Image (tube, rainbow, N blue to C red):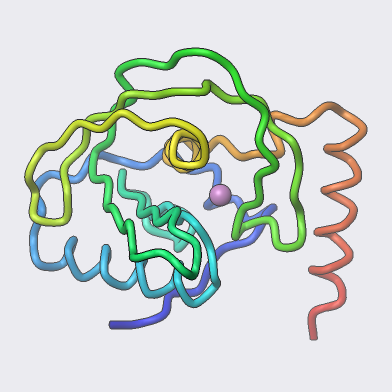
Length: 169
Ligand code: NI
C-alpha cells in the first residue's frame, strides 16, 4: 500500500470530470486500498480518486469515529438514485485544509455502486454518510464544496488557501 499525495484547491485537476471504471481489476483494487490508506492517514472521512489526481469514478468513505469499528466502503461508478429532504452539515474536505463550512445537502440519499470486489450494492444513507456520499460524488464531476458557498465566504476561503500556497517553501 502507498500514501498518495492529495491535491489541494485550486489545483485544476480537481475540476476534471472523472470517467467510469471499465472493470474492477487488481490495479483498481490497489488504487482503492491506497486511497483508503491515504484517507485514514490524513485523517478524513472520505476521498475521491480525482483528489489524488486519478480521474476515475471511485471514492472511499468511512464515517465511523475513532471508538467505533470501521465502516469502510468503496464506491466504484456510483449513481445517486434518490435524494430526499434537506440538511445543513459543517463540512470539511482534504483538498481544502483548515476549511469547514455549513453546506446544504439532501438529508437522505439512495446510492448504487460497485464495491471493491466489483459487486453491485445499493445503500440508503442519512446524516453524515449521506453528506459524505454527496460530497464525494460531487468531486467525481469536478464540483467542490466552495461552489456551494456565497460570494463572500467563497472569497475568504480562496484567500485563506492562497496564503497557504504562498507560505509553502
Ligand atoms: Ni472533498
